[in-house]
Amino acid sequence: MELGDVDCSKSNDFGLDDWLALARDLRDAGKTVVLATQPLVMSEAELRTLRRIGDQDEFAVEAGDAGALRVLARAHAARPQRRPFTLGPHVNIYNRSALAEFAPLGAGRWVAPLELAIDAIARINPPADRVCGPAGPLVTEVFGFGRMPLAFSARCFTARHHRLSKDACEFRCRDDADGLLLRTGDHQPFLVLNGIQTQSAALHCLIDQADTLRAAGVASVRLSPCSRNFVRVLRLFDAAYNHGMPAGAARSELDGLDLPGTLVGGFAYRRPGMEAIAA
Image 1 (cartoon, rainbow, N blue to C red):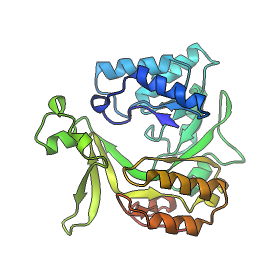
Image 2 (cartoon, rainbow, N blue to C red):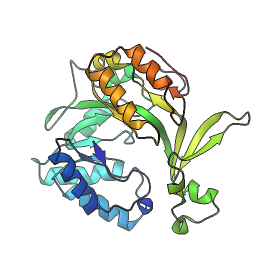
Image 3 (cartoon, one colour):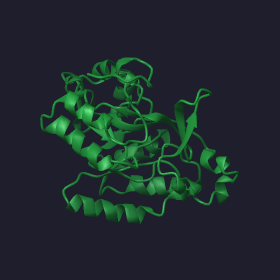
């Protein structure tokens, strides 16, 4: 379970101490917790928070960008026995050579970029010949459900939409749990503005790809929350991936839920990301 701010630190009522307290509660409940770092660090305050996250070793950390990677690599070099960190999906690792270059810095897990196809993931970190870090072979994770974060900007698009400055945004993003929907000229859902993130309007979904992912060496999938029926989404993924629920039945039930977007999966098979792909 990943905890932390991955969008804008201004919009979060939680500080690092609050995240750590919640992480301890979840750990005590039997969960494995990873602390997230931001994919775009833009202020001295955010840099200080990043350094504090990197310095602690109570919980594993995910590198959200190259800056976080540098902080975590230095921390691991100073204390080689500390917890391995995760190479996040925005570190931009698209081939085996890059993964082999970053892994020795202290990585234990790699989250593939969102648009990377499953067959490419299998070639970069195959189950029979995984790239190794200090703690052993790297674990592979993929983004399995949710609106895809496609781009990040120093400018807050939500504040701009409301004709506010980023520094005086009135936290308007809280009014739109799933972001601001953008449509094409013919009124088709296209993108979503969510603070500094530009996301897909559709929901990337790999609920019916469990067997394909296992064959590619993927050990876990990441599920990004949405405002409606997410608990049911979690239970369906658990049933399909861990308890033998047929892939078609899981996908059919998911299709019938009231979700904030249609289900797509084209990126997984080298197709446009807005295409729906079924197993």
